[in-house]
Amino acid sequence: MANPDSALAVAAAPPDGLAIHHPTLPAVVADRLRQLIVNGTLRPGTWLNERDLCDLLKVSRTPLREAYRILASDGLLTIQPKRGAMVVELSREDIENVFDVLSVLEGLAVRQAAQRATDAEMAHIADLHDRMLKAYEARDIGAYFEASMGTHIAISRAAHNPALVSSYDRLNLQVKALRYKSNLDPDEWAAGVADHEAIVRALLARDGDGAEQRMRQHLYSKKAYNLR
Image (tube, rainbow, N blue to C red):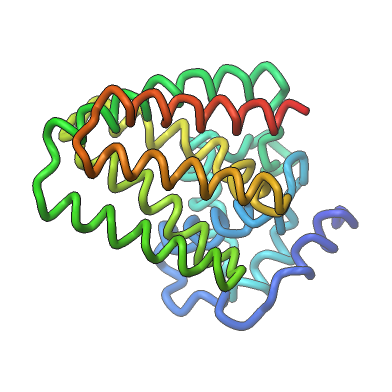
């Protein structure tokens, strides 16, 4: 039986641009579902309706179920026999723990990036930051979030620390929707922009101590906002 909340959530997504043209690629389906989870179309605690999603994404149930398994391994879905898949809903304790660990990981990443990044990597980070600022001025939250998270990801890569990257990628996925949602609050959005300005300024100056301090404070602020 279809879950009414699930059906309403899926119906809220714009159908154009979401249809899958390569239905044999579960990774592509998983990517679309990640987008729907991050932007809040598929809300935490929602049981996914296979029929609705197959219609929306123009795929059969086989690649959809394989995509479920990918997202379950990412910590975004839970799968229960005979019930299907549900979007993970983080507890307050989960949120606190993930952001605490992320603050350490991202703090270390920006410190190591200040020490190890190439000039080309620094230029790429500066370009992403500039794109983020322009998107903020245009109040284009989609473009803003893409550039904002792109900056965080580029910093993690510029640290040249594979162990850090693997841990960061998994944990960041679990709270990515919360990071997106925080930008729907104008004051929190403005505060995030100011944080990014300070972080990137310190990084480009190769001030590892200053960049780490500002990055940690940024993540603490995100944690506090999501625990309110």
